[in-house]
Image 1 (tube, helix red, strand yellow):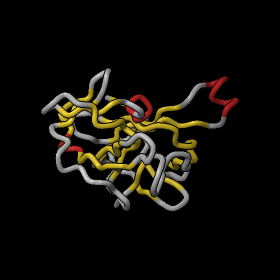
Image 2: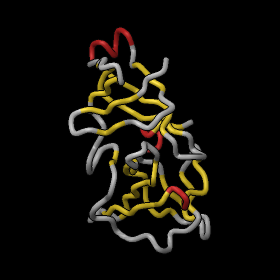
Image 3: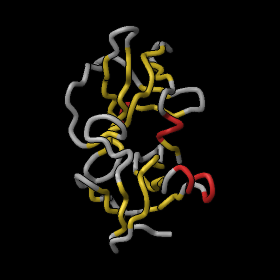
Image 4: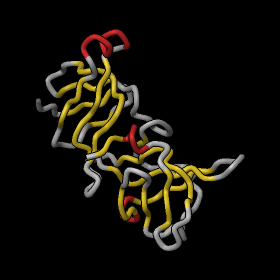
Length: 157
């Protein structure tokens, strides 16, 4: 299991020739709540985003992400689905249980590296609450419902 916060900023390497092709900038999430790919940021001054489909990822390591090949990556302007921090962002949205309980603001997601399935959500109740009580993690084995103002999950704890 991995979190997006640990993945962000990691270098991405091409397995074919061992070159660094950029760094992880964001994750792309489908309507069904699974990771469809990574957004790669590449470039020195004029940085561009490239989509790495989840199927093209060979492995996640402590020192970087390995992709099968960097050939065929093209700049992305518009994405379908959601991202964690950019277009159609979910970070900072309120998580609400199916019973109507406000759980907290989304801070991070936990996902299975092998499948790309989101299995947990790290939540914040605010700065002071996080310091005194810590952040909460809500697990869910069903896809969330993404809305304009909130994300509805079937929370199991």
